[in-house]
Amino acid sequence: MAGAAASATVVVAATRAGPVPGVVLPGGPLGLWRAADAGRPAWSVLALAGIAVLSLAFVLLYLLARDRVVDVRYVARAAAVWTAPVLPAQPLLSLDAYSYVAQGRLLVMGIDPYVTGPIVFGPGPLLDPVAPIWRMTPAPYGPLSLSLLGWAAGLTGADHVTFVLLLRALALAAVVVATVAAARLARPDARAVAVALVAANPIVVLHLVGGVHLDVVIAALAPVVLLAARRRLWWLAALAAAAAFAIKLPGLILVGYVLWARFRRPERRWAGTAAALAMTAAVTLAAAAAVPDGWGWIATLDTPGRVELLYTVPAALAGLAYGVLGPTVGGVSFGELLDWSRLLCAAAGAALIGVLIVRGGDPSTPVRRAGVLVGGALVVLALAAPVIHAWYLSWAVALLAACAGSVGHRRLIALSVALCFSALPDPLTRWHHGLLPLTLLLLAVTLAVTFWWLAGARTPGDRPGSTRHQDITSAML
Image (cartoon, rainbow, N blue to C red; front, side):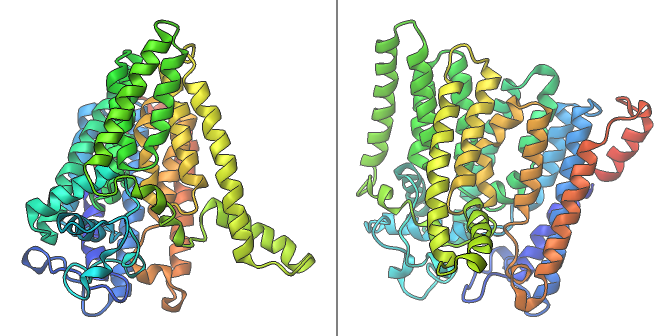
């Protein structure tokens, strides 16, 4: 049971490795969330190894499902076993959940989270676990997200442990919805593959469920939107898309797809589009009315971009430009190039997203092709953004798992594995610990093995049910 052992290793090791400096986490049930007093770099390396093993187990499970060695039930059981160790754990590989607690508490107290950050609480249990970079920033989430956080904070009294476990239960339910919807969208002979790519994906196991990120709601609603549109349940498609938008900005892509797809339908074109638009507006306005300053989040959408990550597409382009212009032209800083690169990526990304939505909403486009196009638009949004986190890939994971072909699946797997190494315990990402080269080396090795396995053709002896496949299954899963 390598997958379960790997996820359990990540839970224990990431917990013992501890948070970034300046953060004090709650002890958790029976003190199990406390960091180690010493040896944190070693615990970080162990967590890194666990992420690598879980990623490779995921690749192998996909291959077994693709070759029809295992069925949907087997894949679902494997995913459940891999997910079980994270259920009682602290929020994994991210401190966002503690920001959720503080933002929910602000709303309960009648303070606008779109105006101020958790810093208003001052030093204490609500502020201390929040990442220092987010303590003074307002919430960048939609009003439906804030309503959910306020409800959870009111129900749990903003107690960290019960708040996290409650949101994790909701995240787990959303993963189940996303998995079932992906299986319904996929071809009958590819349902095991779809389940593997969603439920057993380390992005889902470690970040959506383990990290308790609100992006899981987008992951669940995206395939629901496509299923409803395929069955011409436009009211349901519009409702789900608008709810996704009220959770977080990526939902706007789903809204655009629904309205365009409905408009392109010849039957009752104007009346039907108006009805879908009315449903979208009703849900959006109701969500905005449920919190103070319900449109305030539009002004805070630049909050995530305040973090400068060097592995984003805009940063890579800026680095390339700086490497060329610095020695030749001079007089330009990396920061200036990064600002221009972000603008360029935003403009190009918006144009590409528009093209993908238009093509996806064409009535002649098969439903699974539309799923690939809409899922591709969500991936473009994640890649073109000023900052990218592992859980951003979840916006499109169910659509691509259900609708993409083998090439699309390989790209999804490669992105999933690579992004899993973008959220790590602090000692692994700092040069002064001397562990960053090890992180990059293990990432390169894991990706190399991933590409090797995905590119390898099945030999005649590797037919479904062969002894070789059965041996691999029992050894790795």
